[in-house]
Length: 466
Image (cartoon, rainbow, N blue to C red; front, side, top):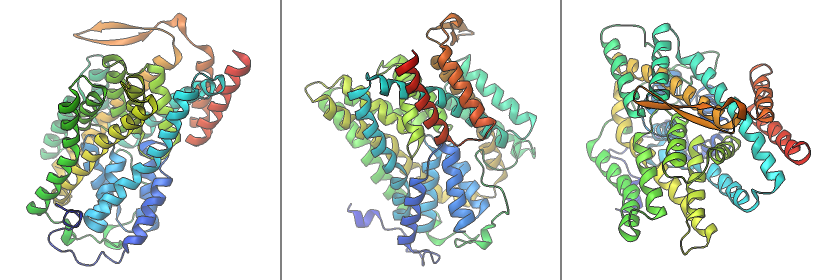
């Protein structure tokens, strides 16, 4: 199958609704350059540019696409870019939108990773990351409040979020089980006519006048190229599946399952399938497995990686690239450690994001036909509510490992959870985290401003006050 075949759709679509492909590429590059602040911020940027400013797509279609992406494993913001790119310009539009969304962050985090392993023990660098950890904690707490304020519109949805938090924090319930249970509850509630899970997405769009589908370039009718076509779906899905899994199989066969590159390929391929609930849910899963199961890095280093992802454009789960980088750097075998680390970062990024294109291209044509299906919409809204509980779990996990030197595991009902040893609190980290929280919640400071200020404060503390 050549690239020309891969990029052709069946049937041939009519004109691209008056939107030149070159202009779309420039817009997606702009979205990628402005995609700071996690999934909520990235989705807000897309909404502002694509819905409010360009009026290429309407509010209803935007939220429908977002809810479908939130149902999928992996980063919903990047998948939303793929979905809308596909809606506007078919396969090539989805490929360009998704790839541009990742590329700036990949290059930035790769450069920061080099600095981290080469100069990480320098007090100045150590101080910068000390401050970033405290700021990231405030940013994650902000995400809980921001998503929760939009998603939890009634007591039923608040109860769903509380149940999800209890299940994951105290019972170690797996993410797929939480997502499946939430989806089933929402689906059957919607089918029974309940209004508890009625309505839109967890991250929402901007405020102001609603842009209706009928007033946009795409219109409210289903585009010809967006109609389900089994032949095209099988062809594109087969190509993407091969691009994803053939390198994984080749590594395992060539080097064995115990090799660091084989383990990176298999672990992050598994992650691409089971990590539901958006970027913060993915981070909770990766943090647990990479730190506790594989021992690739320490909790503090995981927070350093998240700080990199927060301060660079692109999806927050680009932190997985940092995890693969460090894992290969410390187990380079016969390779130069930096060469091994670079290959580890590339491999991690590949197996993390190629499946995102597969999920969208395989499912979006069929999901577009279900935009007015109330039980499905209720199921997606129930998942959004559960995600709030998952993000709260992540915030507490980060807080414990950022503010305390020691933690201990407590058994509970067949599971376990971490509690801090109060005597090991890091007063400087606590004060810096509180200052970041005040800046975020009281003064509405931007994410980049808070991260920069905390990084500078951390450097001053390590250099002059510790």
